[in-house]
Length: 586
Image (cartoon, rainbow, N blue to C red; front, side, top):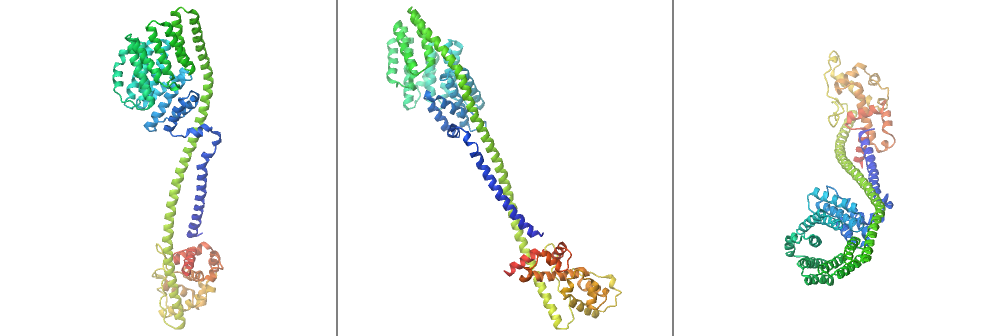
């Protein structure tokens, strides 16, 4: 099969394969999106791919409603699992804040203290790894140790909570995070009053009083709470009971009575109880604590209820009300037991919840693996397509150059064949002395000629043929060679040519060698190739045979020999010559 035919066939095959590859790539690109989509939960589809900032804000809204705590925990879990060293810094901070929020939910909603401490320690470790201070991590660390200190009355734990709350206070100010500032400072105030350390937060109060607090309504309420409990507890410490009570009553009137401020209402009644206790009015103190208990029960603040039961037990004992003391003691122990049982049940539910989260994460990992695999396949395909396009461009340029070369060769050979035909016609009409036949284009780096350069033959020096004799024999050889029926016989030999030219075999060989510069086989093949070109230029003839049939009709014993000889004479293959002929005649 000739070169041009191979190029065309290979190009079509390559294009077909490229189409098939593109279809496969498109199928692969859509496969990860569709396969397994039904296995993912609605939650995964709705929330998992949500941008981090949007998902964090959504989780915060869920966290404000105790009935939606599970939803908040799931959102925070998704965010926490997105953490990667390659994330932008703001994304890393959101992930760590999500872990801290999980710790807060575990501690103050689920009462899973071990899980809460585990998560807050994880958040602290990750925060230190990125070398960025995040106020909410310090805040929740402080709040947890504050709660533990209140229940255990352990001074080192309380001191640790004060340190973390101070860190939260000071790191939140440059970030203008006034919500964290207010929560941290309000808890600092209550802790330091309880442990008679109000002097320890004088520096923080000076900083706080100079802040330009946010104008949001919620921050105004927090600011009102912080300022009044600070002044109220200072008055109480100085035994200025009326002024202290005035501060706490102002809070109860100003703060909205709703879930967001329920702990502040509960705490304010406890502070009023402290005022009555300082005044020696234990009955009113107990009433204040009972009012705080009512709020804690209404809003289901379990950790506050435990603390209030403990206070009511202690003050009932002071007034020697054994029945009331044992009543609150029973409530205290029952709540402790219920919390223990709750934690045990929560451990089971938590295991189920974690199992669900892990399933979601497993789906995520599989999806990411598929996407990574797709990216690799697409990268390989892009490289392959790029190389293919480069190959096709080079192939196109080479084909165009080859076509131009073949057209040039065809035109030169066609002109030489025409000139030779005219010379034979003149020779037949007039008996003139024959001049050497015109040279055909010789194969060079890009083309070939009909004859080779004429060498000097040493073996013919002893010949007695004159130049006139040689011309006569040459004319007879030319006449004999015009009989293409004889020349195209497969068994045509130099003996048969000598017979037709009426000369001896040696004389014929000498004339061919000296006048054409080639041997008998090359001489005959040149004539046969000229005949092949004539037939290929004839539209009627070329439509009736194949290249192989043409080669056999011209006396060649094989197609390969014909193609080699054709390219030697014309500089191109038979198929290329045929295409050039068709193109030139179109």
